[in-house]
Amino acid sequence: MLNRKKAAFAALAVIACAATATAGLVWGGGRTTGAGPAVAADRAAAGRAAARLAPGQNDPLSADERRRAIEIAGDADARRRGGRTELLYVQRDDDKAVTGRRAEAFSYDYDSDRLTLRTIDLGSGRIVSTETATGVQPPPSDDEERAAAELLLADAGLGKGVREQFEQRAGRPLRSPDDLHLRGVIFKPDHVHGVSNARAVAACAEHRCLRLFVRLPKGKWLDTSRIVIDLSAREIYTMEW
Amino acid sequence: MRSFRAAVIAACLLIALPPAAVPALAVAEPPSCADPYLVERTFANGARWQLCWEMRETEGLTLTDAVYTPNGHAPVSVLTSAHLAQIHVPYDSGEPRFHDMAGGLGFSAVPLQDQDCPEGERREQDEVPVLCVLPDQPRGIAYLNPSLGEDSLRRSAQGKALVLFSAFELGWYTYLVEWRFADDGSINPRVGATGSLRGSDGVVVSPEHGWPIGVGASDFEESHQHNIFWRLDFDVQGPADDVVEQYDFAGSGTASLEMKRKALTKEAGVTNNRTRWWRVVDKTVKNSDGHAASWEITNSDSSQYRGPDTEPYSHSDVYVTQYNACERLTAENAEPPCDESVDRFVNGQTITDPVVWVSVDYHHVARDEDHDPMPTHWQGFFIQPRDITASNPH
Image (cartoon, rainbow over all chains, first blue to last red; front, side, top):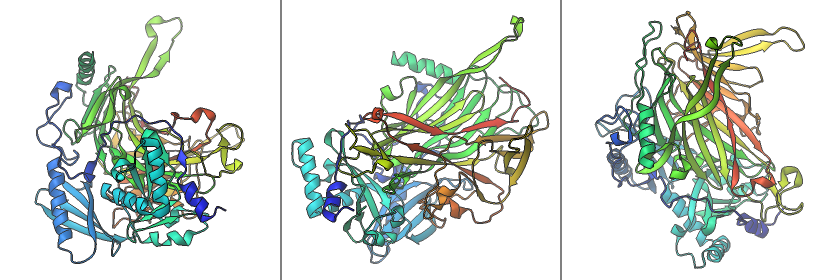
């Protein structure tokens, strides 16, 4: 069994790998603010048949639809008193029984650890259903990944390790979490088996916790498998196995 | 060169033969989407596929309203919705264990470059090219009947497929989510994994849990599973009257095999075996022989991973459930009021509108050759028409 210090070191072990060539551009979907222009409708030149003027029932949300959904859900969140509620993102509601365009909006209150899922009729602008749940965690948003990286960097031991590894690869100091390529994955205690300090992550049964994949410049991944970031308690746990 | 290729693709996509109506099959509605989310392809043999695509935040590449038109026949609807439903990655030592789609598959979509899609067309959502459409991929010999001695009866054809794929960077792995729609009406959903291995630098891996891919015999890469689930909402000419049947063949060490048919009328999780297959059949939609139209699912290539009791969704290979819009992922489903995993979606409902969940698992024991860039390894299954037409229409 590794002791905590060794486990923390192992948790930040650098994976040697070549860079995977991707453009800096990343599809943001509903995590963006919806500021981007709508996809151009006229693609006839590309030779596609059956172009239509109106969006189809199954088309993704347009930038305008996404903007409206974010505004309506954001207003509903703002009417709530107390708590720390954030709108995570919106996506198209694809219930096949529904005709007309609808969006789903995911909001999370980190104080009460409650997920709210609202369904918005984009035609009328009305919220047609509101469901809440605790212990149910949709994927993390961009903002949450950044908040998790800030907590990681603020940790005395782990943050120092990340900064050192970054500087070694980039040849310059880390300025902010924006320098890191991040991908968060929801973590729950029942995802682990044989962790000797399982009680340390027990809070994640209710809290919003995630594991963070962190890629440094030149395609180097940090193995952060053992690190759990609790966004509700704003704490970091290092699992030992 | 590029415009020439675009013109060729455009010409290929626009070749359309008007289907002759067959009274026994009602005509499917066209897909409910507009350009650039509509994909249509009519092959040289007259077969046609039409469908919509969407990059969804949680589920990633999602196909809707897939309609197949056999040569000389009316269109028939196949899938109202199809997408991945979880990528479960447990490592052999017991840790770590990831649910990769709990990161939001769509959020990880890789912008595709021309070199990733050299014989196809990149489609954009929100101005990012996230889908590659390959309209005319060779799939080998479609059929060959030599009719030796009678050259006039010789029949031979090269098969083609419409291939759609997107790539997702989930941590160190890059997943290729691919759908192959063939000109014989079959569908091959599959996932490739490439990118990088997790790496074991600084992490203790026991020899029984890995393979030494570093120099000597001290640096082990940990073996692991990729347990991939698909969600398939079949609607054979609409959702009404669809039933899932399971077929088995009794007899072992015997000269004869006896076919056993079981209708899965209640929600269930079932296990795969080598000769078992399933079909989604609409008893009211018949071909000109009077046989009920169906889509057959075979799933014989899975390593059939079975996790601990805390992972009950891994204890069956195929699940059949009643359609519910908020049941979307087999594990870490996060759409209240629906439950969180597919084993709990199975709660005794009678099925009138089936959704089929297929799990194909792959156990990866790394090799020296898997060093970066790791060669792609694939896993998937097959769907094929069974009695949509009364004979081979191509």
